[in-house]
Length: 165
Image 1 (cartoon, rainbow, N blue to C red):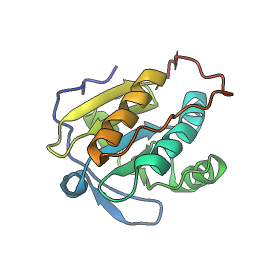
Image 2 (image 1 turned 30 degrees about the vertical axis):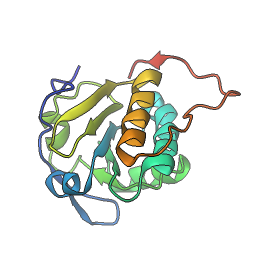
Image 3 (image 1 turned 90 degrees about the vertical axis):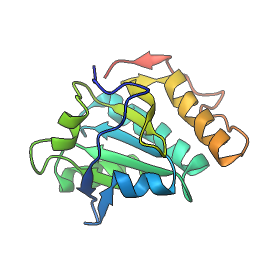
């Protein structure tokens, strides 16, 4: 479990991405909501979940919504993961100083995904793969962007309701 649940204020953080850019939560939420997805490259549930996060990013990312992957692995392995799973949103590295951000969020399992609103409040806190939680993230972002909700899962896909991380 994480100790950061919906309604809590998300702990601030500043981490470097694979391309060495600095990303600060405080700065990002000034532009709009942030979807922060913590993961390990060896985690099969993370490998399953990240392509769906990429779909959400394609539908709702861009101007005023930021998607971030937060890796608990080294940059080289993480870059390989991003290529392998087709991840185009920024990936930040949290293994440099002993998982400072993961620990601040009280993570015990990955993937753990947070939708953080512009006031820093967590709107969605989801551990493992949870179909309904990902659909809720999509619905929240569609509403915020005033666009119609796009289906996240294709009818030909067999997607379980959840997979524990």
